[in-house]
Image (cartoon, rainbow, N blue to C red; front, side, top):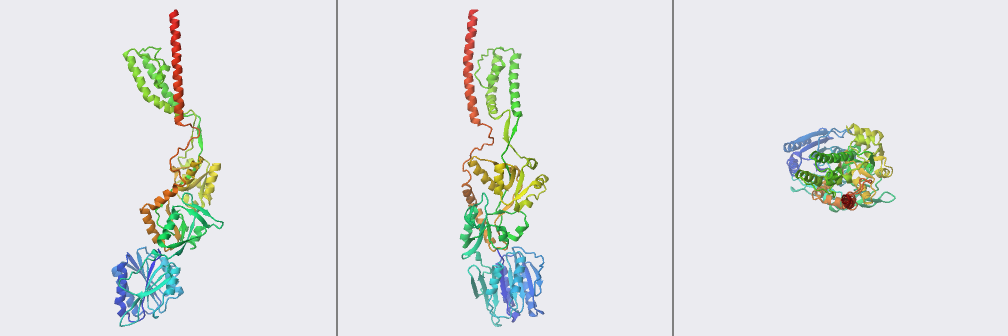
Length: 579
């Protein structure tokens, strides 16, 4: 919000008689406004001051006794190079202008330049020593409005020695109303003019940003159709504050904002450390963004999978352990063959009839082991192969650098992207290229798979999920390599008078969860609403079907083994009868 101004005008007369009234009005100003300190500024074009010197000293004493005060003094003109001013948003600036005539255009510009130099949000202008009577301050207030000094109040004292009449001058630039009324002790020094902007034209533009805005522009780059949570916010601000949205072309929007041709850029943008952002204003940041590298989905094939060999060796060791126990205890060799032991372990149909007690105990242990072992073995058979194919994973920036992928970074943030102490990350800068449109980067990534795009997480998720719905997944995010989490904010032009009101409204919408609801409503339009299995390995069959195949084949093999055993048993019986 641009600084509120309080202008106190004193006619040349008996200042000592007016001093108690002046002190009372200044004391009223300090008591009714919440300021932490005061910057008392004196600009003097008279020499000598005479009684005015005493008047300014008394006003300074009144202020300094009430609140911590610093003093700055100038001569007739303000220098081009201004000193460093210690002023914050809680600082009140009392500007004492001591001159013979009404301030001309140059002096008005000097006053406005000093106030803007303070980078402050609450300021007061105190004008003294004017010989003119019943001054009309409409032109002066309109000129100050051109410099975005929105809240200014003029307190004019009459020249009568017997009685003092004080008039208050105000100007509302949004309603274009100049008001002059008598001063009252209940005066609201700085009325909030942002409650109703009376249809004031508010210049905005919308930028294309994946995951934030759905935008369509015409041949002149004017936004025609635009939807998204940030658009809803802009329309809510317009409805609450009663301003009219005037859409501007979005080509070179940042430069237009710095030149003052725009009031706001939609949607919110990341607040990276950039010198150009010092020429802009912005709202309070209410959330973070996450920036990560996006890589193509590629696969690496391991010719020899060690897990498969480990499973085979484990099976052999367990089988030989039970077979060795049966041999040491001298069980019947015909029943305790390795093939039958393996059949028991995998829960296959095996013909065994243990007779001795010890033999039954070992047989029970084998069956007990098979209840756990067979289930695990089936799982291994469906997931472990001799030659494994899996997605390529990048565990560090060194892996990303050695992959041969060319990093592509948004040109606006190319330098700040690699502003880090991580040498592995900085080594990517040597082969990185800057691009003005990251949509081109994702298109090249999907088609040729030879680049990695450094992008914001929400935007790339929108692309990935839209590809998943079409079963054409070509990219993924390296979440373990995310390199920045900047604030997200709405950029305004420098010294925007709307910032304070915007912050208050956005804070309430954020606290109520309305902005988050808008986001989820918008996300649901292009993100899948239900979780869908995404094939992360195109060469691996489904686990369920593998289990079905194993179960059917195992059942058929058991039936065949059963009939084979019957045939072998009958053949053995016939041979025995003949003998």
